Image (cartoon, rainbow, N blue to C red):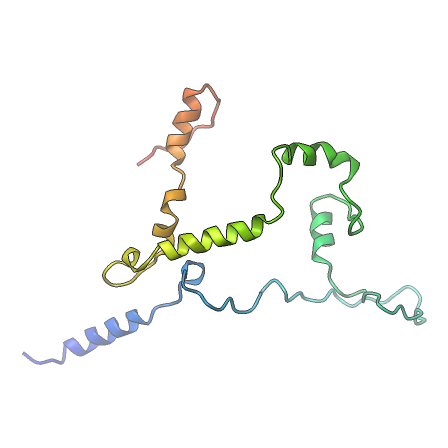
Length: 167
């Protein structure tokens, strides 16, 4: 028996081992890389109604610069408020209800440290013999069983939509 048929198989195995990255599933990420949301395309150029140059406005904005927050608010049917203007009068009841149990000003720091602890807890044992994806095992305890929740809500008398048959 010759080794000739084994060479293509070995090449395929080597190429398969060079598979793509894990992206968000990489729990050991040390570099976050570029921020794709910090690059904004400019608005298209337009001819102003008056072709004279406007007076310079130091510290002003360019008409072709984007404002993602204002564009998002407008896309959702809202109106842009000045920064630091506070809560609109129409939303005070909503904000009061959302903060009825108090708010934590350091919530982002708290969540980041708790998530780091979860990632550290998902050690090498979660990878198995040949490595693999640790993302789902690391967060498995947070998974929600949709069918169990549907049954729980139905038992409480809450009307829930129908769902496809479970496994």
